[in-house]
Every structure is written in C-alpha cells, then in structure tokens.
Length: 128
Image (cartoon, rainbow, N blue to C red; front, side):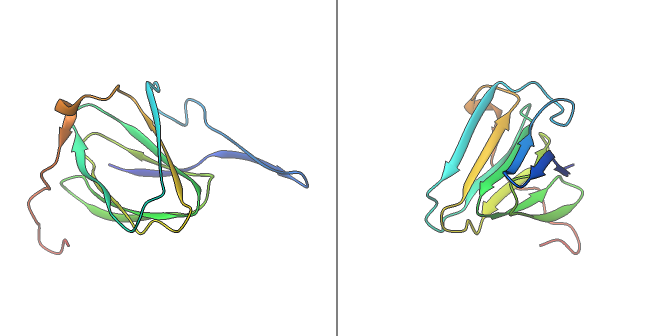
C-alpha cells in the first residue's frame, strides 16, 4: 500500500534542506533515476514483483495514480519534501507532469525487466 511521507526538512533564511535517510526510506537504495522533460505523456503503468520505490518530485509536480489490488488512490506530488513510498503490489501511473518537472526515484532493486508486471488489476466496484 502506497504511503505519502514528509521528508525531514530544515528551513531558515538561507533556504531549505531536505534529508533522505533511513528509516524514512524503508529499504536499501540500489538504484536512483530521474524523469524529466516529459511531453504530456504518461509514465509508469506497471507494478513490480520485488522492487520498492520512493518518488520525490524535486521540481514542479505530477500526479500518481496507484492501485494495490484492494484500493485505488491518487497522489499529487508537488513539493520536494514529499515522498511517496510504493510497494511491489502498487500498480502506478505517472501523469500530468508540470513544465520543468523533475521526478527522482529511489529503488530497492537494480533494473530487471522480469520484475515488471504491466497488467492492471481487475476493476472492482466503485473503482476507476
């Protein structure tokens, strides 16, 4: 089940400093990538067999649709001190990237195409 957390942030007249550390990120980070320059397309559209992820929109914003097979939720990531933790069952779709958005993703596993499941969960009553 996806969880939105606030990163520890220190602010003063000089600006802000947000910290990414364990135990807030509940897994060992093995891969880091970022998404930027999105042209209005959607990204994601999958879930994982093993990989856990932490999503942080460093600049701008985007919308994350999430379905864990039991519950459908929509999250807006539009502050760099927000972090969305996705678990392997979380089928997610990234959309509505603002111009100049930069989405940082921390992953618990190295890339492995066999880890990806592209099929959506079967619709349930009241779901989109």
